[in-house]
Image 1 (cartoon, rainbow, N blue to C red):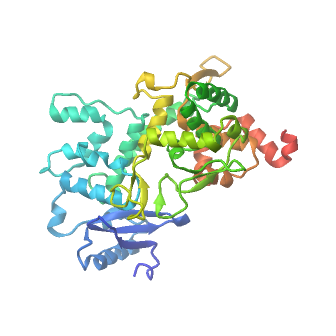
Image 2: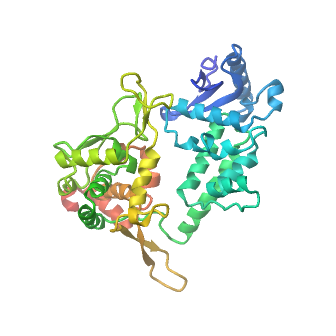
Image 3: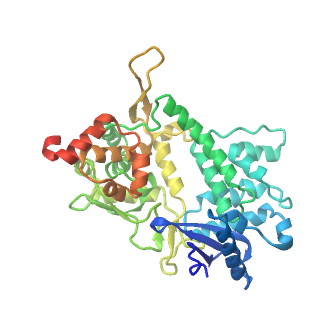
Length: 441
């Protein structure tokens, strides 16, 4: 019926979810999906009722109103769900999506939402309080109402995760307590920080030069061969930090590696399987990324910090029993890399002694003609951004080529990874691409 009505919408039943799901077919093969509270999967008439409601709303509204569809019926509409019910539903929904389960931490075990009163209906204020304050102060307030709530710093990684938790609640069918307006408010708080940096002429990324990275890697290899190898892999191939654990094929005769597994039902990395190209290729031999040394380092890394593989049920993966395979602790593996390089959350003795720095240029102060530069410490993701800029500056690859080997879309590559490229780097890229390799050299 939806197809005959020429609507880019479909209904399906999700495993582990008590509600039917409505999803929209977007350009590029992407989908937008939400659980439809009030349309129970166990109700034989729910699919037909939901279909009629969708067609009715779509006919009278050019911009489809998802919230209007998600209205529940009868006495159920008057009764807001309590947190135990919401927690169970969110965990089941996320597990059914086949992605890692890091985001459901607040909804299971001793997570914050599990500690709220079980017989009290959930409210928007509960979610907003969670998003704006640190987890430690929230739990302390539950134990002692006199304890103060500490605001969450918007530039911290934890604030981004809290924004994603709000989005997860909405996608799981609880838009009433996690409205779009709340997500927009949280997004605006982050953008205020970014806009202030842009207005001050301050770079949001610390992009180290190729020479600085090489000098630093030489020192780290001497200090700690295992982590020197790991960071050399990230820098040479532009990997996300957690992807080092999921290297499936070490450098071949061309220096190429493979990341992840080439199977649709196995997704152990953020964007699935891909081949990655070394840049510069000389680093493969310089840091002995492949061969016997590479195999030993990869085995040692996996034995020290073990990836946790699960099936679609969230249970430990069994190769003889399960087909679906996911990695459940990628975020934790990436955090280990961050702690090694730079983190206020880690012990000082855990960090590497040798730090990686980059020069950040700010706008000139009032009455001054020259901009000011300051030296700042880098994080692992800065190595990935440096790879993107190095590819733009030193190769004739297209946006699509670089995006493919880095594992994201060309649009993300242009908007995010090339936002920090300098005028000289842009000029070098144009010369190499339009005037030929010889002229660039």
